Length: 146
Ligand code: FES
Image 1 (cartoon, rainbow, N blue to C red):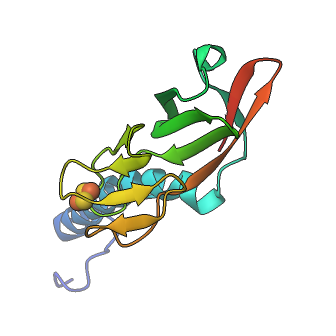
Image 2: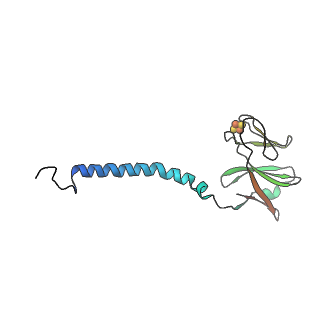
Image 3: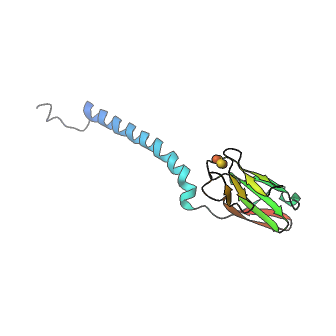
């Protein structure tokens, strides 16, 4: 019986091939699974949900607050006409914008993007407006809809 004719059920070559395949599968899973977990909320679209703004009941007309809504920075303002909420993340490279109540503009400190009170780009390198969030006052409590 030659070596070629030996049963292939469990020889050294078969064992090494099995180990290499197992290590390759584990390595591939270690690279793919975190990426899928990162994309999962976006892929399923997320469930719209109202998130209470802590301290929102204390916002007086003309005041604003930057809050975290499901891990995203959002600027909530109480304008004379009602509540408004916009993403605080600049659409250029992701710096946090600040609300300048005197100018009634969002200003990005990184590359000087300027957005108007409705989040539209006024000047600077930002390629898109600030995303707007739905916001409501229910019995004095402020909720942002995600
Ligand atoms: S990150 Fe805001 S202007 Fe560049």
